[in-house]
Length: 340
Ligand SMILES: Cc1cc2nc3c(=O)[nH]c(=O)nc-3n(C[C@H](O)[C@H](O)[C@H](O)COP(=O)(O)O)c2cc1C
Image 1 (tube, rainbow, N blue to C red):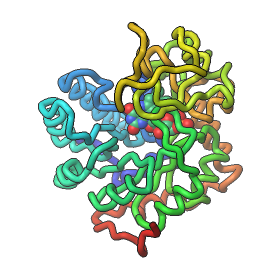
Image 2: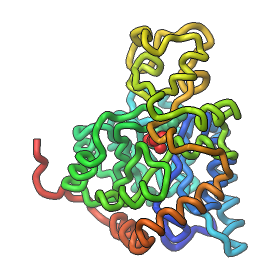
Image 3: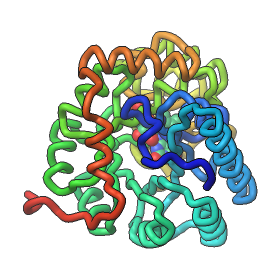
Image 4: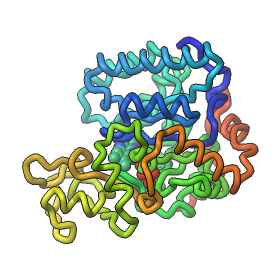
């Protein structure tokens, strides 16, 4: 990778990551996030076939080199990969080979056991964070040697956990000295400051960035985010198989009764009428939807977050904390004994 920053976090403007999200995480959104100074997340599958994923990586690397050549910031991006065994292994291998070839610096694994991906990523100097919705997930991820934990707490958009963030972050901190990212219900700078006070190093925001102009969401999705309130978020396994948060208005628009949803077919699929699809036609949002009043550009979102964060936190020390949680070379150790 050319033009890389000396430190992974040198170009971060504040400790925020834009979540990898089906449909919403377009290449435009990722580029806008990196240029605005927050980590841009995306699912490798969002790019389509592995060849298109390779093109996305090339575009991002070129944009980073161009930004650095002009003395501009370009925050890192993070690539979301499934870690489940039931995947198309050919595509998974092709995507990991592309990550290796481009020297991808940050990966986020979802589901399953991240150990094999951690081993590969560490061989090229990449770092791996893992999505966790339970304490068991944390223990498994720590045992796999991950560099960061993404705690998907209650109230998140997408597949949401059900744990309270106070209890969740504190227990993650007892077990792990690496980077802790808190996701769920955060959409303003006061929330970022609160997450750091809880013991997290960084936050992940999804719902806030779906409403950004550069996201791949249709305008009607943005309008619904602005119009909806937190009381209208429905936590159900009926749409996507696993429990996830969806907007009540979108469930109704798809001809379904939010109060009488069908049982899901399995852990990955709802029993939905033809043409009705989780994420693409039934739109997701987390509890932070009640904080979304507009649909500005990513740059405007980030400038606002920075001003709010600095007003409530002072804006000092977070980068050093992140860097010490992710030193150049380290062996993660469990902290104390897990309390069961
Ligand atoms: C539409 C949508 C799709 C998502 N898809 C993914 C995904 O593919 N992989 C993932 O790790 N997280 C995914 N997430 C969850 C986010 O990474 C993040 O945990 C969540 O959005 C944080 O909560 P917030 O929306 O309240 O900010 C998704 C979230 C949304 C809203």
